[in-house]
Image (cartoon, rainbow, N blue to C red; front, side, top):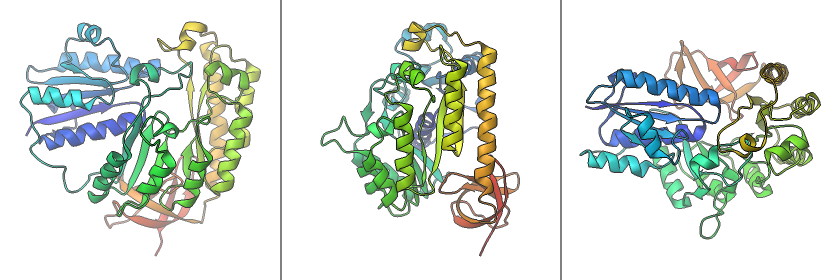
Length: 419
């Protein structure tokens, strides 16, 4: 049997598209290879949202150039693939196919032209317990620092029936949790006939037999509706956890970022969400060192983290991306050491906060959906997305188990199974 290897970095949308590609290749009777050396087909699913990610892609392409055999095919997708595909082919002749993110039809056509055709249905059982399911591609917001609209294009929603069918199939295969993903899931459906919305889609998915949990990301604070918050509060399968990127805690920086809301509006949204969904876990994304950010403005971001008390904070240092408004209009004038210092300050503060939040779970019993086993321990996540480890001899994969928390840390919990 031919083998494939997919190298994936970047966002959850990339992970969702990797699953779609894997499912398709396995319908062609390909089997996964652990290393690219052993694969007949190597696919890089790429990210360029930060310079560090783009450098990893370029380095991996160089490695594959030296590795490639005459019988091996190399493909590249994800946000590294811009509109200038002829230019990419010229710079990276070792690559057999470039296809833009989400353009699985281009891959299917290439495989068909190579003589490959579907010879089996999807396997009857899933190898994973959780899955990412894309519901909307692209973004219309054009935040000044973000390259996504230039690589993934404008927003394009998938029809609800198509998403429902996919999730039903996943549940039939044993997938117990799905995360609906998009660059801005809150805009879902506005471009479709009848204008369905995310709240309505959640209600439809909530009735699927065999599906136990539903999550969704990424949200945009200016587009998240009260209808969606109400749906979260009412639907039993929708988990009490969301990612709500703030990006900064200062209004002038938010305006320069073109985020479309003030920090006061953001705080009010957090308050409404916590009122409707008690105990909800909140995570956020932050960028430090945006052009022109002063020490005082950064202190406003620290104040936001201190006051809101997020469960998780994903912090990045600003790096200019080609094509974006920020790269064209603003000088990257915050020194590297200042960016690093601010990044560390956020990390240190968030570590203290997460330590305190998770310590509140000590001695309590939490419901865990078990995903797999690692280093002799079973692991899974709570409905609030806390990572939990525990011991046990029985195969717990795909099960819901009750775990009494016996140890806490900022990053995970440990415990023992209760009756």
